[in-house]
Image 1 (cartoon, helix red, strand yellow):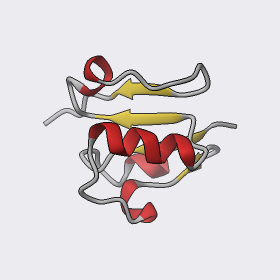
Image 2: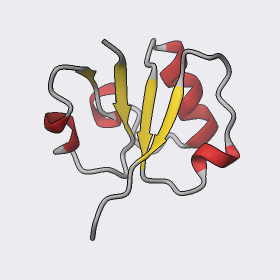
Image 3: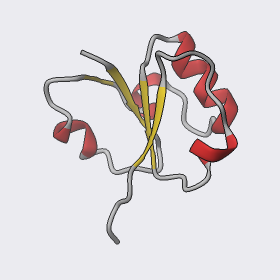
Image 4: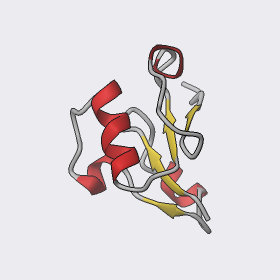
Length: 78
């Protein structure tokens, strides 16, 4: 079961939708305000395997090291 980190730009309700997975939000981790490369590094160092983000550019701008980490872009309807 992958450890999943939803980014702070996504609704907290997403955590409930991922029931059955180990999920901690950026707020849960005390990482509010940490962005892009620094957030990716913290997530990887803390054993997360997936970062879900609403940031349109993050997955293109950042290249996470290793094959065991993924950045997934989530589109949230307005």
